[in-house]
Length: 234
Length: 320
Image 1 (cartoon, rainbow over the protein chains, first blue to last red):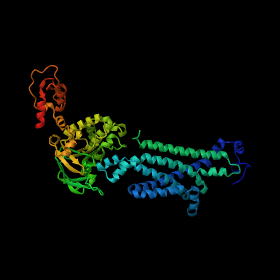
Image 2: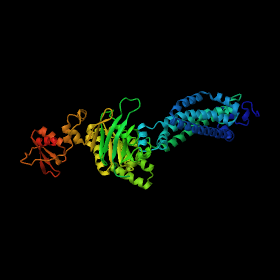
Image 3: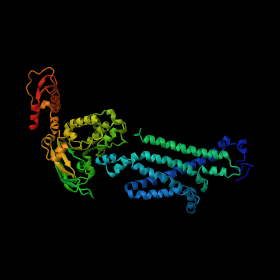
Image 4: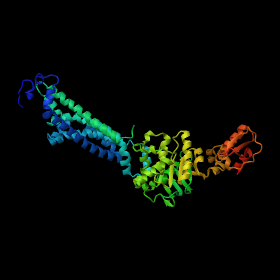
């Protein structure tokens, strides 16, 4: 990096607002949207979607398994709880030894956290079908599989969406820490601006605001999806 | 599927693991095709257990149950159940499906085409007294009575020869219950099904059943006969106690004044009490006791006197 100015070495050709380190400089955001904010926002979206998708797939498979074999539920819940207690920083450090400064190192802990949030929600959802509904379904001659696909899974949707909303929002938030493993996500510009001799506030606020906006947007998309899929509740 | 089927319980026994007492003990019962059979008795009598054995939601240890001569154990359970309508007290409608979707469940399972299913839904909504527009509603938008109507329509959807009903009206208010009881009787005449109906309420059993099976603690059959025969000749002290001391009045409640021999009309006083031919003998007797006149004038639908009923004639009915 070339130091071009006394206060903010990275952004030497900035405006008076930038060089004077005002509270927030729109012109910086405009100038650096293309080279800084947008690429990191895209990375952040990718990280979140990859982590939640894989986490969901594993949580769903586990939930189906323990729904069928109830004795497994307790052990799985305990392991899931333990995973959640591992601080993300520690997880990244441990994984760097195996997978280096790669995306895998970042994605694995994020998958772990979303999995741990999603699993109990999916399990609770699958058990949300009232006993009389299950009895009527069996009495009408639905097979185990038909019971699952036609009754239990549709009735689990509200709880599954509830879990997805929490998982997505928290993955977006935890995803900022991914920058510790390299140039990934909206955490990176934040850490970079914080690391300057005088932290550059505009960059921190802009990236932070994007994290919040991303979390809110994904949450809204999930709310809309739930609305279109779950029509039976008033 | 056929119109109605004979159901035979042949020395059916069941004991739950770890229980001393039988849930059901050598129950033998023949329910002729098309009959409305009520299983009644105190809790612990095994009536729900017996009902659920027919569609194999509950297994039995000994004996056999045959529908039209074929053992229920012959078919895979899911296939058997698709040929038997099943209605429970809590209804158990699928909350995520519309009324139409609920009714379509079994027809879809057995592979009816869409046009046939649509026509059947319309037919059933009409049969159970719902509007065609109700088909698009969700169960959460219905009253308790409407839900049970949908439950009944759903059970009848694939036109099963047998209908099992487990205290279907137990959770409804008395007015709704009475209306649905009446409509189920009418419906039974229209659709020709063999119905097994479980209740703990002897009044409901007497109102609904062509035949009543009274079960006692330990799952043994105390008596199996028509309501009139049970009220006239209770088999033992248990049945006597179960049907109540007012069994004479209950018997009279089964007869309509239009169906019993009436005395000739002679110089009826203008202020005399009158009852319609459709009234029960029990109601006429109540009026006799109230007025103390000794006889009550029975009038037809057109208001023309049909005859008189006296207390002596009512008493004679109980001797028959």
